[in-house]
Image (cartoon, rainbow, N blue to C red; front, side, top):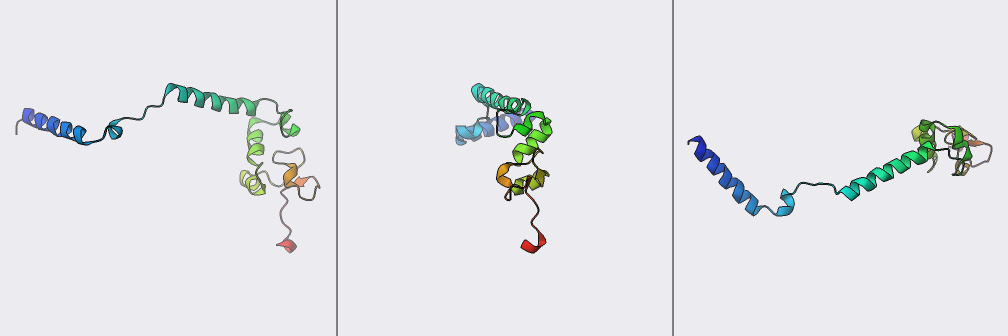
Length: 119
């Protein structure tokens, strides 16, 4: 089969495929401009909140923490399992990872290990 006939046959097959395939499967996904701009704004807002002094937010101890410590502190907020996962448990008052909710006996140490006699 000559090359011109092969190309013609390939064009015919592609034309039949396009006719049989629904249009939604042929379209490429292109993000809309507003969606991209909103995503960029949300991500930058989260970055600004993490970088600014946190005196007015949940924990005044975050004011002099580094970015890494702030992120670890915020990731430890749900519960002691999350604090252990990010490596900040047990935490003393004023350290990253200390939350009043996690200090069950109010002795200044949050997410204490469970004593062997209580297991």
